[in-house]
Image (cartoon, rainbow, N blue to C red; front, top):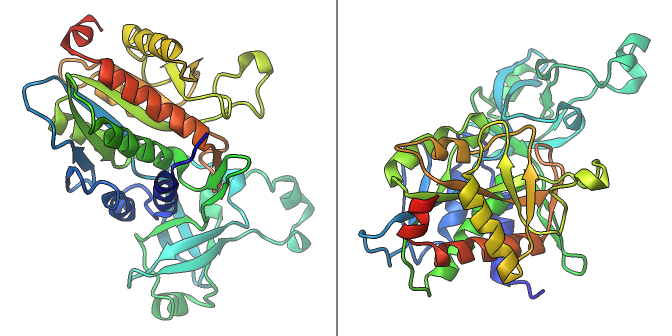
Length: 360
């Protein structure tokens, strides 16, 4: 498969942007670099709206959504010894935290390196060793190298309320088509949304296309609640970076395999995706030879649930790019799955018209 170098550059830029929930500014700045041919704006929640200049205003509105935030942390307080207590922004895999490197934004807007502390095994009691994989996040600290509260505040310029992100750089192994990085939930979806809109600019459509990189999904789909009322769509696709299940699930039950195309979920804990629309998308993928997977999720949630029940009800499906090990510092995904996701979304939009929407 031919890889578009501009797409890879966009994915890298979005992945490396430091934008945990509520602090999506860097993600929006990265997205602006690749949306200059569109009308764009943002709101006070940090939703970033992308509108095709070809829209007429008299066609059904097709909304594309991908959330721009990533899981992260916020500084809760500074301990007397100079280490930092922190709170989670989103649902972390806690066992992935100790001894990991992070970046803390300080009062001057600079990002200070830190390490999430882990008590050396040499100093653990036998009881602590038994409980080393069971802890509360409030028992952990971030160490930036300060020796006291005063030094953390004055020398490092640390203050409460500032965001913290994983310190991870994007890598791409072209030979094996493996992308490693942070924030693929949902920066890989953001990249797919932007690329889909770019490809559709050359097409004559029966719908008006409006995209949004929505804020604060990891804290309960907050941004999209605002965005859906701004866009007022007739139909929607949510892009996601969804958890791949092929490294720990029995073969018969794998529904989100790596390098097998996007996953379209029938349901999760938050939504039953519009069944007739879901079947339309799956049938179209089969007809066009686009790799796709279907799943029934027994956990999780996404922005589609908010869109589906907004206004008078909106048909929605979720196109999920498989990502191994989401909600930890590192994720693994592939350009192949990204490309298949873009092709499927573009094909659906090109086929869509008011008659189909009314049937869903």
